[in-house]
Length: 231
Image (cartoon, rainbow, N blue to C red; front, side, top):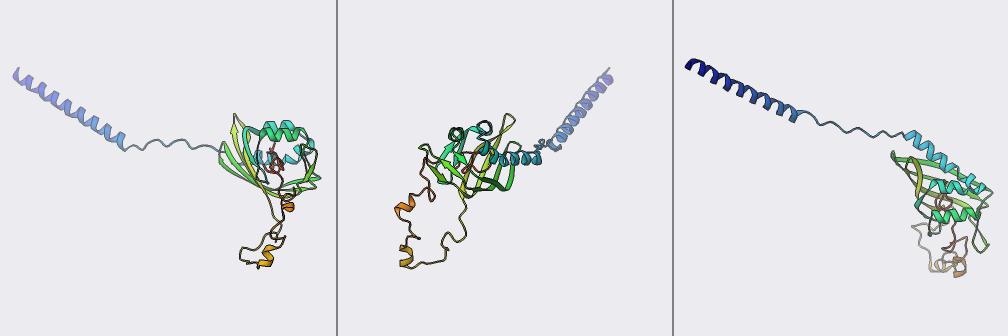
């Protein structure tokens, strides 16, 4: 009986040692196993570039046809825009301008488009627009000339599966030689000339700097936030 008791005790001790070794091995295995890597986000860059390019290139048609619905569809309700004269506008401004046909042009081209995809739901588009014989009709019925070239940057976000224009800014492209060379040091006579320092009358000219209420370029669904609303 004593011998049997000893055998039972040895058997129990062996089982405990074996069980402890298995648990330790399992813990080591779990510690050494590499953590599962997160699934990489799938971004269809080509499809995003195609869609945003289509939206930007549709702007000339929107202006010509006074397509208010396109502006409402593409621009986000909380969108914000900076126009060429430095004023700030929003979707409501663009919709209102489009409804009253404030923008017109003999020719409106969208060039040099470059789409930068940030994620599957965000992208930035930059480009250049060329406006020939462009006019902007102010609320008082007067018109100003908005002809020229502009650089623009538009920010898009995908919301509920649809791309929305959420922000944009544009600026006029100065003609070569329009600004003085940074290294030039004009003489006092030159600095005092009207060409270097426009008179108040010149400064007030719409062509030089439209007054704040003037929306030279309503937020656009396509081309340049400042010069055009982009549908």
